[in-house]
Amino acid sequence: MKTYLPCITAAALLGSLHLAGAADITGKVTLKGAPKAEVPIAMDAMCGKLRPGPVTTRHYVVGQGNGLANVFVYIKQGAQKTPASGEGPTLDQTGCMYEPYVMGVVTGQKFKIHNSDPLLHNVHATPKTNKEFNFAQPSKGQVNEKSFDAPEVLVRMKCDVHPWMFAYVGVVDHPYFAVTDKDGNFTIKNVPAGKYTVEAVHLKAAPTGKTAEVEAGKTVNFELEVPAS
Amino acid sequence: MRGPQRLVFQTLTAQSTNDIWLHRFAVLTAAATLFLIWMGGLVTSHGVGMAVPDWPTTYGYNMFFFPFSQWVGGVFYEHSHRLIASVVGLLTAALAIWAWVRQSAGRQRWIVLSGIVATLGLMGVRTQTMFVILAIAALAVVVFSLSRAKVDPQPLRWIALTAFALVLIQGVLGGLRVTQLKDEIGIFHGTLAQIFFALICAIAIGTSARWAKTKIAVYDGGALRYFYLLATGMIFLQLILGATMRHQHAGLAIPDFPLAYGTVWPATDAGSIESYNRARSEVTALNPITTSGVLLQMAHRVNALLVLGVVVFTCVKTVRRFGWDSGFGKGAAFWAGLIVCQAFLGAATIWTNKAADVATAHVALGALSLVTGTSLILWAGRCFRHAAPVVEPVGFVNKSEVPA
Image 1 (cartoon, one colour):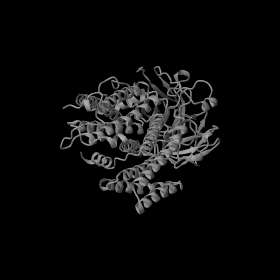
Image 2 (cartoon, chains in turn brown, orange):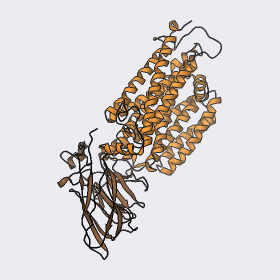
Image 3 (cartoon, one colour):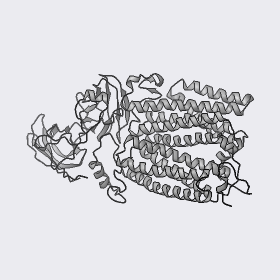
Image 4 (cartoon, chains in turn orange, cyan):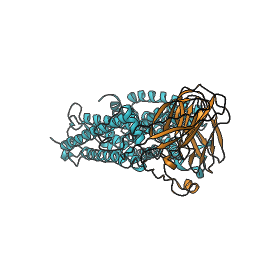
């Protein structure tokens, strides 16, 4: 087994006041160490037409400055239970892959599952604490709404028709979470002032958390280090 | 002999039906069942057991009219498995009808035949509720049929009726595994498949001309019958462990062989399990590695070694007693060969990262190993002496090879 030393460092770079007594937490998660090589995916003929070219797994998506994508960053402790506001996110099936690979929802928040492909998929959630579901999406353009009732980081979604299709949904009971972009950047918006434990979760790295104190209008700096796996 | 073995032995001994076409039909049903097990193996090997999320419909269609253009990806394997299962169900129904036509008369015959036909008709309703009701009724039929088979001078018909009830239960278990999202039901489904296959093969053996011609209780088999029982029981246990691994998607909980995570016995503490999961680069949506998954696979490996040892030992004992040319010698040698191949396929399943064709062959050979052991038990029950010795060995055992 190839060994490597993944080290995710999350730094809160900027806090800006949006609401009275609230601030955004922005930062960047970086991977230290060489990621394991991705594995090629052998799609079937129909999916191959929808997504020509080589396709690989997405365990480590590393961008500029070793920024690591698809890390679910959320306030693990200290946040008040807060219902979601606004429309929920969409999990899309396009070119026989899920997009996004990682996303987050609030407990009870309805999110859309969309089939953009001209072929059938099934959508199978395999949570540990929430209720499992599995339903068909045989038509292009079909949209279904689902929600999870209990916090759970992370719930796996998969398609059994195309077994290489899987994605993850982080479920928390407040809206203070974010997923890092392709360069490892994240923003947790409108965090009320207070003391929190922020945790970064990546599928292939040990989750790690650190206390952070947010004050309205003040920049908060902290780092998260992940032990070697 | 005790328990189920005695029941099946007495049943087949009592009837000795020498009907060549009924026998051939039973062989056909057994072959179709093995093909069905193969297709079921493909379903779990590809990890597509949930590719069709509804049942008894398929993506809302009556399964027999599901458009071929939509047999894509994992749907192809799962839907094919369902259709082949329907064929096996119909073959088993025909086998039961045939047995009842041959071995019964009068009102009882028509009551049972009407019941089978009515069941087939009710299956046409194709709702989950109807199938569950039929499965519950089928369970009662299994209990009643087995009790009747013990005392009826024409027991084949009851065994065939049991097989029909079992195939119905088996189909419903497969459907409920999908709709209820329960791996545990899948484990029962995988195990019952093996029992059903063994039962159909037992019917095929019991209806054969060789079975009818073979003289009863002519040879001194010593303790061999107990070795057949022991080894077959261990194989059945191995199949249960295998079915549990497959239906919990824990087949690759340990990715190396003959070592396990580079050691003889892998660590199973929480930290180690977490590191196994993080180090894995899964291409498909495998279930997370768990302590129970690792221990399950270790149990499968240990029992595989025991099975290999006991079957090879039993083979040597059989050959020493009856010789290579005897039916028992050939059967035991075939059995040992199967088990050696099976052990290699088990290792190859790991080495190929659970390649679907290799893993499926492993399932099919497992079923054949169980059936070979079952057939040896049945032949031993028929040919081996229980009390007073009988001279003049003929039939299944080569006369010249029998020790004095």
